[in-house]
Structure formats: structure tokens, C-alpha cells
Image 1: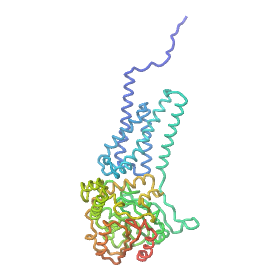
Image 2: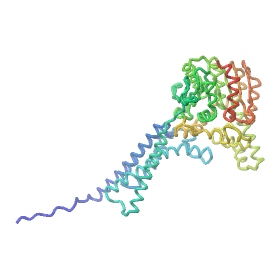
Image 3: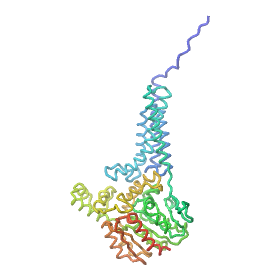
Image 4: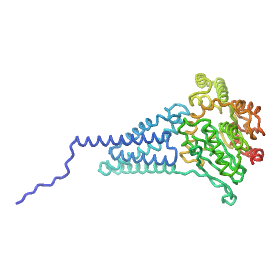
Length: 508
């Protein structure tokens, strides 16, 4: 009789030390993977992903890293470990980059904004996908190995949570992927007007890609280039919300200057961004428009900081411009800021705002090295110089009412605040020596100014002095009665009428 031995009931378990070694290597691999992605992201996108494509890549790679972490560790702790390791590596990798959105967080209004649009965006595009990916990976391992706790209720809750997380990520990706667009200019029949132009362009300006919105009913109309305020302001939304009638008389090109709005990716390296380079960019954009529309000269319109930039461009190359229009004209940033400081300090003391008065006294008058000190000195403008905005096209919210237009992608909308803070911090200290009263006594083109009757004294007083002494072939001023610093957006009908009747005749 032949006897046989029984087959083993299962594969022998590996020794405990072998299991511990494998687990240890898996956790080390997870840490290494998250750290590697943190370093890559910190080097390539130190100020957050700056384009829609980069944002989508960040989401997808972070999801993949998270899933890998969950599969490797086989633990829900990967949901915490991977994002924390990524965040540490990311912060270390981007340390050479400076600016409000990347510096240490600060407990102030500007500081909170910087935290939200800087680290907050990275959290939404990297940390959240990584955490969810880790949960998915760990769930897949547990389900395959049969280690999930049983019960209908628990199972239903798990699948509900998994489904909800997938929906959240899909919604984020769809929102991020929405492209920017600008509506065609149409007639009464709904068809595009022949000879019109309506486009969002990306043009090469001195080796950098800058965003340019171009709109007009007739490309044979005079060309107008608009420069927004700031430094760091973007007004695609305000131009679309309030000034479409301007497009009937002019082909209107609205530039997003380097480091702002749709041109935020062009900010770095910041040590190459100077007042001189900003003027160069304005002239290069002017030449692009002259060539594109086959015209010798264009109209240059600036608002706030854009007026300084425009004046300096016209002074340097007057042959390129048929007219200059200053709206909310700036003359001397440092004197404006000092007048604001003095008025704000007096107001704070009168109104019993002892905390603000003490802080202002401690920091002293401008100029400042830190942008956050400007917040203290300048952010109370609407309380110090109040007037009724309710009857105006642009309401109490000012430029903040103009974010939600299709001309911006979701990433662009976040960058409206990031660009303002980072670009202001880069460029504003460099323009403290500008004073048009001494720097620009003459302009060799017709000049026009639209000022608000409620403009703050810190701006109106230096402007009045410069306007009185400025010589030009033509020099005109209109004061719009219900406006402050943004009359073209607060009273657009009156501004368009001024442009049509006074500027258009000299624009050919």
C-alpha cells in the first residue's frame, strides 16, 4: 500500500523580520516619491501652477503619487504622510523665490489673501488630489485582500465617500479646464459684424508671452492700447463689463502687463522686471499693434499706475502715439502715499481708531520696504475719503466686481490677486523716485485727462500741479462728477462720450 502525505493547506508565512523589512521599504519609497514630486513642483511652479495645463498636470500627477502611496503603504495614514512630505519638500525647493504669495504667512488682510491665492491654490491642486489618491490606493488594497470591515451600512458609507471624492475631483478638473473666451461682436441679426475683431491673443513681448485682449467693431478704426493700474492690476473684466461702447469707435487692445492676470506666468525672474523694462514692454506692444493693424500711430490710455507707464512711453517714443489719455492720473507715488498716510493718521485719531493710529505712528510715513506696511497706510482709503458709489456703473466693490468674466480662466482669476501682490511687491519700490512734475515737463502729443471729482487729495493735488505746468500740443481735462479714482469704469457713458468727441478726432 502506498501512502501519501497531505498537501500543505497554504503558503508558509514569511518571517516577521522579512515582513517588517518590506513594509519599511514601502514607507521609504512613499516618502521618496512624495518628496520628489514636491521638489519638482517647487522648482517648476514655485508660485503655483501658472497655466490651465500646468494646473491639470499638477492634479493628475498628485493623484498618481497619492494612489501609489496608498498602494505601497496599504494604509490610510498615507493620506497624511504623502501630502505632508510633499509640502515640506515643496517649501524647501522654492525658498529662492520671494514675494507675498511665497513668503511666510502673515496675519493681515493682504497676508490672508496671499496665503489663499498662493498656498491655498497649491493645496487644492496638489495636496487634496494626493490625499484622495492615497485613500483610493489604500481602499483598493484593502478591498482586494478582503480586509474591509463588513456590514451593509459601513459598505454603503465607504462607497458613498469614494463616489463623492471622485465627483469632487472631476468637478475641480472641469472648473480648471474651462478655457478663456471672448464673445464675438455681433449685429442685430446675431452674426459677427464684418470687419470686426474679438480675440484673446498671447503675444511675444521682449521674449515673454503677454496676454492681450483685442476688440473692435471695425479694424479700420483708430487703435487704442489700454494700460491698467497697479502695478499688478488686470482690467479685462472691467473693460468687458463697462466699456463695450468704446469698441464702436476704437479697436481696443487691453494689455495684461507682465506678472498680472493672464500674464502672471511672465513674472519671474523678478530681478529682470524694472520700470525700464515695463516701458520697453509698452513700446513693444505698441509696435505689435501698429504692424498688426497697419497704422503709424495709436492712442495710449492709462489708468492709475498705467498713467505713469504711459507718460514715460510717450515721452520716449512720441512718434508712435497720436494721443495720450490719463485716467486717475498718478504723478508722484511717494508724495501720494505720504499724503494718504498723513490723512489716514489724522482720520484714525479723530475717529478713535487708536490701534490703527498707533500702528501708523510706529511704521512712520512711506516709502516702505515691506508691502504689508503699505496695507496699513493705504487700505483705509474708502473710509478716509468716502463718496457715494451707488449710482455708478462700477459699484462699491470696485475692481473686485470684475473677476467673473469668461475672458479669465479659473487659474487666471486666482492670479488676479496673486499678480497684484507679487508684482506690486516687485515693481512698486522701484518707482518711488518718479515725479512727473520734474521728470516730464513736456509731451509732444495731444494729451487728455479724465479725473473723478471725488479723487483723493493725495492724487489730485500732485496732478493739479503737474497739469498746470505741462506743455503739449493739446491739453484737455474733463472731471466726471460722480467718480473717484476709476472714472472710466464708474461713469463709462460719460468717458466714452469724451473719447468719441475729443480724442477720436485727433486719433487718425
